Amino acid sequence: MCGIVASVSTRNIVPILVQGLQRLEYRGYDSCGVAVHADGLKRARSTSRVAELQAQVSAEHLEGGTGIAHTRWATHGAPAVHNAHPHFSHGSGAGSNARPGKVALVHNGIIENHDELRAALQAKGYVFDSQTDTEVIVHLMDSLYDGDLFEALKAAVAQLRGAYAIAAFCKDEPHRVVGARAGSPLILGVGQDHSENFLASDAMALAGVTDQIVYLEEGDLVDIQLGKYWVFDRQHQRAAREVKTVHAHSGAAELGPYRHYMQKEIFEQPRAIADTLEGVEGIVPELFGDGAYRVFQDIDSVLILACGTSYYSGCAAKYWLESIAKIPTQVEVASEYRYRDSVPSPKTLVVTITQSGETADTLAALRHAQGLGMTQTLTICNVATSAMVRECKLAYITRAGVEIGVASTKAFTTQLAGLFLLTLALAQAKGRLSEEDEAAHLKAMRHLPAALQAVLALEPQVISWAEDFAKMENALFLGRGLHYPIALEGALKLKEISYIHAEAYPAGELKHGPLALVTSAMPVVTVAPNDALLEKLKSNMQEVRARGGVLYVLADADSHIDSSEGVHVIRMPEHYGALSPLLHVVPLQLLAYHTAVARGTDVDKPRNLAKSVTVE
Ligand code: M6R
Image (cartoon, rainbow, N blue to C red; front, side, top):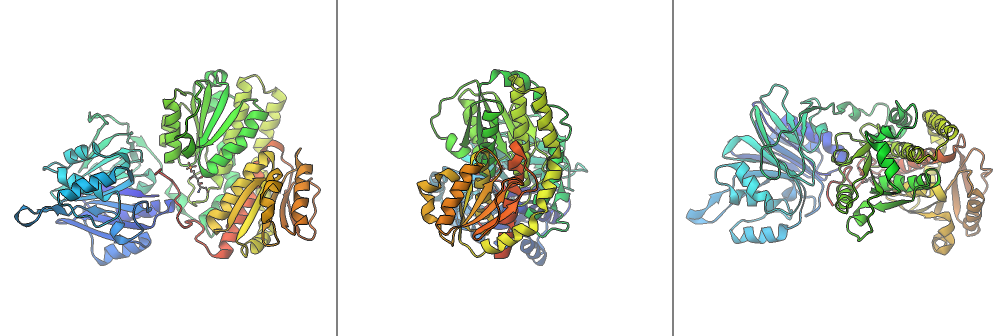
């Protein structure tokens, strides 16, 4: 999704801005650009990769100490150079009243009232040359400018509705960049030698440049100059914000022996799970923060809010929370929950699940729940410094490490690990976890890294399945019970990166409709652990075979399903009980990955998708 890097410095800052954009590339974008103050406003923009932008700025000798840069993920207006940021104001009026443009601006988010603002600005003589919502902000600031860019920003944001992170500079104030955030993240980086300052949408953009980071809060405005900065809150009062030392992991960008980040991240799962569970000696509610015991005792239900893959981890957790902790659990897609009439209960624990901690829909759903009086909130999140962690009362930080591939893999399995711990901690707080069960569950969790390693060794078998799938245009995924969410996740992975249309069903639903789709051209992936529903699942598989469908079965070590004509079986190394979803999802990740590689798609940056979805 969109990324921002900006700076005021005494050195030529363009190489740092472009490098910052490179660090944000993994989030997904379709155009990019950089602008500097160099005796006026100068810029370069491209609909190609950041590397191409770099070549362009070198060729054009674009240099300057004050600048802003951006990667754009198109929402309003196609990916095209004229829609790429930075945008410049053109000024207004004609003839002797003509007023040249002064402001350069980048923006993440969506301005909802852009139509009415555009009409008002056009009436004042402003001419627009993009289809973006962003361009209204730059002309608005220009129209409000009266010698002080920060005052223009303050007046402009008062007229904006929607979500934004903004960075802007002005032709008349060469050593100043101003910024604002509401609904989209923006951080301030304090330069190491105190002569320069930065703004960015993510601390990762400044890795290796500065580790002194201020996380701006909702509604904050910021003014950075050479060696000085000021932060103001939404009431325009000076605000003291803590400077934190943040070690953004630029090293995560190394691919090592892997061909793609997604492959690397799949293979990192044993380590990611081990890190996530490190220090868990026993099940205590305080794993989730101070005061968790009281919260866990007070609540009588759980509401999980999340999007995409994180939503599917929540769907799996519902089975655990109801069967092990005996707590009624509801799982909702965040973008639906935030707009529907629901019946709130103050005794509900609201659990958000998010890799990035910045997903706009999940944050909005959390705030909606809080607005309804549900103040007991907990997040399972991979980014300790994210808005989600700051806004929830309790948190469990998964330690997947930076996930670069757009298709989420290690974030999913570490979320499951965190959710299983939550299940056990809730069960314990409610007096529903015996010492023997706690010991058995902990033992199984500690063995997960080794168990995952054994599953990863199945890769050659999965590659042979992927050769078949690469020729297909559709696929069905079936699972039952706890493994239905794993089927959903398998289908999502396949469609995201291979562009094969894939759908998942609870296997019992097959005969209620999707069976009509089954032919020899419709591979049917079946997640078949040896659980209480295995015999039922075998009947569903017969229904597929009887219609000429070809089955690809992930069987457990002891499922007693063998390969035969039209039935391809991969046997999992060991039977894993309640934690089996963490293992069964891995061959499905590998299947999506190798199918996509065989089809030649851009695995880490699939078309139309972004890593961190910070707009609605
Ligand atoms: O950062 P989050 O976990 O909140 O992101 C949620 C979804 O956008 C994300 O899981 C998305 O579905 C992935 N592309 C799935 O691979």
